[in-house]
Structures are given as structure tokens and as C-alpha cells.
Length: 156
Image (cartoon, rainbow, N blue to C red; front, top):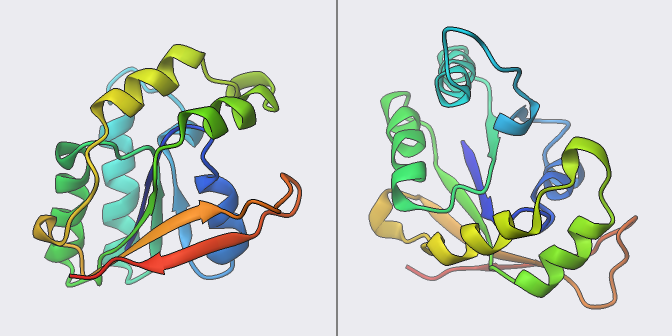
């Protein structure tokens, strides 16, 4: 199980497409349809549970900004003895705002949402139950169409 963590418009979904689309199921609350009977959190949990039951690798692509957001994901992974890997897109409000302005339709988030998420963001730690953690950021020379990624392991 891979858990992506970062502000809106930080590159998480693009990172999924360039690194894991061929090998991992993509689960994102942004892609889920609302239900009369269930919240998006419940629907997401069902998708993750199903993938893990069927021993399929899964990427959870949300902001996952707080320890509480990540706790239920990590608990689900542990129930199925999954390796839990986190990719932490360090908050960069300026960059997220810039990338957000390039979005259209439902992908465009209100700017205040980026600030709210940044305010509540708690960096991940191994104490939460991660097996491996990585810092991720889009390289300076990168383009939106073809991003280059800088990935560094976070020591335990």
C-alpha cells in the first residue's frame, strides 16, 4: 500500500500516473461519486479493503494531511500484512497555488483549501506504522507536462 501525502495541486496524481499506474490500483476520494448512504471516506475504505483482500497493490491519492487521516489507512494495510510506503510531498503553498491555477473544472480547488490543508498538515513519521517513507518534490527545471521528480528516503 502506497499512501501519497501533500497539498492539493502538489503533483500527487501525476506522480501516481508516472510511477504506479501500470502496477497499482488508484484510490482517490476526488474520483469517487457521492452516495446517499455512504460517505466518500467509507467508499474509499471499501475500495482499499477489496484491493487488499485480492492482494492487489493500491495507491491512496489524497492529501492525507493528518495522522488521523493516515491511521485508518495504515491499520487497513496492516490487517492484510501489506508493506506501507509513504510519499510525502512537502508542503509548498506557492507551488501548489501556481499549479492549481493551471487546473480546470472539478480539479481546480478553492485557494483557501490549500491554505487550510497546509495549516493542519502534520508530516508523517515512522511511528505511525510506515515501513518506508520518502520525500518527493517536483524538480526546479521540470515542466508541468513532463515533471521530473526528486525522491529522497526519509531515515528512520
